[in-house]
Structure formats: structure tokens, C-alpha cells
Image (cartoon, rainbow, N blue to C red; front, side):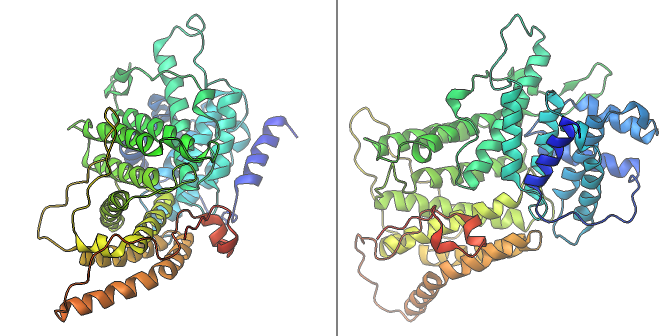
Length: 496
């Protein structure tokens, strides 16, 4: 058995879940159908992860449809089939629809070329693994994204892509830009996948030294053949956000668990950096990308502010920030999940994020229900002169004023619908929905009683700064939960 075959089999043995279904027959879709899928991929996914040459992709497709397969190598076959697999599956609304079924057919074809496409020692190995990781995020029933991003990062380090080469070794700026983009695509996926699973990054920021690609290299431009190439400006913005997320995640969750000496100043500075990034987003950004980035920033605020071993103390102002950003996130992702068209790149990991955000929302309601539901102003904590002030409260959406009780109930009810919607695509989301219903049942019942009392014009309850009354849901190891081992998960932390 050749070494490259061993590596491909190793990847598949480690990263496969359920076996792929047998495909009775196979034929390429029409050229126009394929181009539609590719265009969807380029607009919504490549624009965030420009990890390969667009001209190579289109040249490969041209050869495939001209039936000149002999001139196509295995890495190029993998590239074409995996782009079609990801581009099709990303448009799916249900595991029973044609988009998902076609994605399975495409990935089955790609896997026929795995031995050489995943051969170590070549840039194409990294690019092939990036595409495989993207597909796994859309099809967790069959592949494990955590293992795949681990293999991808290993390939990056083995090839030295985590360090810029000496200038004399690589003078071609376009080639250097492509190398750097490939690295940051892996970096971006690794940070995102690690955070959503509450796991350590595959490599630290200190271990890498790669400058940004030239900003001009992300712009839409003509190729040497005159064909207009897609722009990938959103990718540069995403790379910047991932680096910001990486900084606070490493400090709060991957370092010595002793409390930081001035954790609040650190957290407010990290939030300020992300707020400035969000405020500087260009007006030209497509609406779908803007919605994705808005969700990413709110998720990051909540993740960063929530209690951790290094920043265990929470103020009512911090709870209010989590309350507001969690509601905004959960209401927005409800709209995104129920849209008839999937814009940007959403995956099963968004179901995990919904569960995380909902659990943090429930936690702050349990800790400070009276004061949060009253809507009374909560002043930010005092700050020493010269230090970063607390993150300001977000603006409430325009429209009729709804009190926090109705906002909370509506948000909790919509979250169940979001997880149910995702359950149509991913069975694991059905498990998440059941777990969410367990952790939210008590608070929903209590809020409904409050609403009934309010509707009967009962006198208002006295508002007080409430100490935590119940266990606080701080972190969840979703995989342990899915194995039915929720209480034993070492990533669940409770505070009394």
C-alpha cells in the first residue's frame, strides 16, 4: 500500500461517521446546472474561503464537459467534485431534498480520487482538505469536521505554510498571496470549529507568522484569459475577525485557568476591537455577508463576556449585554434559517451556536430575571481612568416597543423553531432541540406565569439586584450531551 493511499485511508477512517449511501448510477449534471452550483459556491463560500485558483476550477470543468478526462489529475477532479458537493449541499433545506442528494453524489465521486488528492507534500493536499472540511460542516452525519480540520492543520505545518518563506525563496507576489490565503482559510476554519466545540486550537497564534495577503488580491479582476474572477473581499474581513477571536479565546480558554488580574479590562478591550471591526465594514458588503458578520460579532461578544475560569465574575451590566446580544442573535438566526435561500456560508455549526447562545440567554435570565425583565437601566461598572470602558449596549431594533418579558418569551419560542428547522437538515439538531427544551422548560413556564399575572393587571413586582438563585449554565460539551452523558461532561461548569 502506498504512503499516500495510507494517508487517505487514515483520514477517512478517522473522519467518517455513517457510511455514504450506495449510488446506483452516476452522470454529470448538465453544464448549466453545474455552473449554477459553482456560481453559488463562488458567491457565498469562495468569497469567504479563497483557497484555490478559480481559473484551475473553470479549466477543469471545461475539460470534464469536453470529455477530456485524461488531462485532469486527481487533485483537479477532487476540486471540481468537492466544489459541486459543497455548493449543492449548502443550498439544501432538508436532508430529503435534491440539493443534499446531489451533494452526496458529488462527494462520492470526489472520494474516488482521494488517494492522490490527499497525497502529503503538495499544496493541493491542503486545498483538498479545506474543501473536505467545508463539506463535513454541512454533512455531520457522514463526516467529522473536528478531525478533518486537524488533518488540514497538520498538512499546513508539515508544508511550512504557517510561516512566511524568506523573500528570496518566493518573489512571485501572486503565488505568495495564494499561499497566504490558503493558510488563513485553514486558520479561519480551525478557529471557528474549535470555538464551536469548546476545544483547543490546532496551533497557537505564536506558532504562526504569516502576513496578510495584499488587500488588492481579494478584488474582482480579469484573468489572463479575460474572464472576470470573483472577488473575495469578505474573506479578508473574516480573517481579521478570526484573529481577534483567537486572541481572547486563547487568553480566556486555552491558558492557565487562574483568574486574570484585570479580566474586565481585557474583555472590554477585546470587545472594543471587535466593535471597531464591525463599524468599519464597507458599505459595499453584500447584505448576506453583513448578516453573517453581524451574527459572528454578537456570538463573539456573548462568548467573550460569559463567565470563564479566568474571568469568573459577572455584573448585572454584563448580564444585560448578554441578554441583548443573545436576543438579537437568536431572532436574526431564526430569520436566516427560515429564508428560502441560503446566503453566505451557514452550516450545522450554526445549530451548535444557537444552542450555545440560548443556554447563555437562559443563564442570565436565571441569575437576574427581575432586573432584566423590568427594563430598568443598569449602569455600566466604573472604570479606572485610562482603561477601556465597558461595551455600550446595542441599539434596540426600530418598531413598536416590546417589553423584555415578551421579547424573552418570543425569543425562547423562536429558538425552538430554529432548531426544529435545522433538524430538517441535520438529525443532530433534533437532539439539540430536545436538550434545549429540557433546559428552557422551567424558565418558559415561569415567564408565561409572569405574563398571565401582568395581563390580569397585577401590581408590579419589586425589582432588586438579584444574586444567582440557580445553577448557571456556563459551557456545554455538545458531543458528550449527544452521547447521553451530559452530567459527566468535563466542559460543563456550574456556579451556585
